[in-house]
Length: 76
Image (cartoon, rainbow, N blue to C red; front, side, top):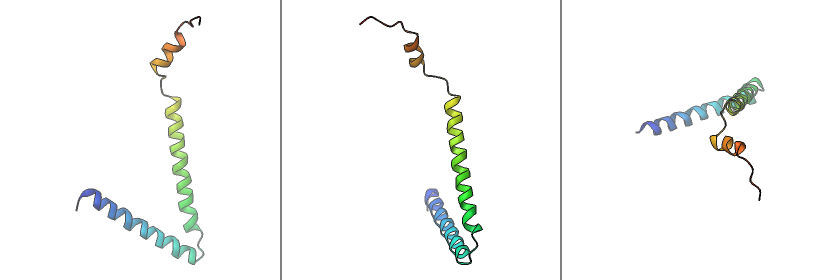
């Protein structure tokens, strides 16, 4: 079995276990088992959004944009 297949099987087993834990927790009315994954998901999305914003704010402009801004406008 290849490495990617092993990783796929591990991910499927982990997700099935997670879903089982969530279902058992919901049946026992332990809403912390639902709140923790939601908080984690919001944290991950916020971190990714911050990272994309940081990258966009700190990226140097393209040379083509600089050349077009420095060019003298022609009379058409």
